Amino acid sequence: MIAPVVIGVLVLALWEFAVRWNEVPSYVLPGPLLVAQTLVADWGTLSGSLWVTLKITFMALAAAVVVGVTLAVLFSQSKWLEMALLPYAVILQVTPVVAIAPLIIIWADDIDLSLLICAWIVAFFPILSNTILGLNSADHNLVNLFELYGASRWQTLRYLKLPAALPYFLAGLKISGGLALIGAVVAEFVAGTGGSASGLAYRILEAGYQLKIPRVFAALVMISLSGVAIFLATSLISHLLLRRWHESAIRREN
Image (cartoon, rainbow, N blue to C red; front, side, top):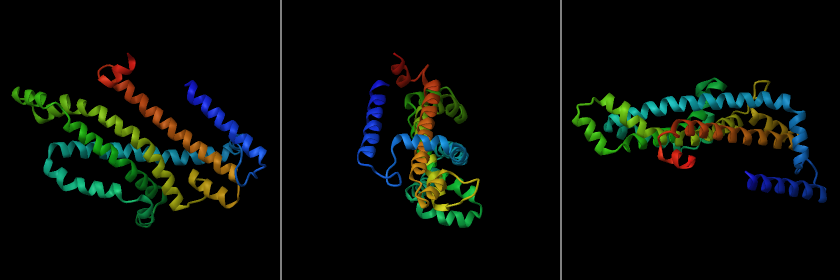
């Protein structure tokens, strides 16, 4: 922890020094101290918007987990189904959400639902692809052993394939957590909704129009810290679930 903290402090100190030495106006580039002061002063407004953004993020991540894992299990049980539907999941993933967000907003006719759909689209594919890879990575010798002892497809899935897929699923979860937050913010930018129930993206747009650049930086800091917190939370979940049996977690402990 010492090295990144020291580097971060040095960068912030140089940033503050450069802003003060060159007398850069705050509407061009505020210093870290002014950003921190703005974060404290505007906490009441920004924290409410942060909760709106995080609510969409967590709902999209939960939907991505449910749909992604369900489809991955179905695909592992039916190769025909995988070949028929997986290409459409790839198309959905590679289509820029910024391009289709206006259409989703029009079709959904509900801002919260449209934001949820946009964030879900971004977060869905990593969980699907990683879980499929994990289900297909089960040791074929063990699969043959299960078949030899007359295990049903459900028993093979429950006792062999799902445990084998767990590390891959958790890796996809860590990726999708950050992507869900990005998707929620991007969707809010496109929607441009205001009012008391608006997310942090709208607060950034609003502050930018009013040249309140310190508030823009304060909102960006909140988004970045939220993304770091989501990554740390998913990493902790992964560690707790894998530490007693999976090789990667055992090596870390030793």
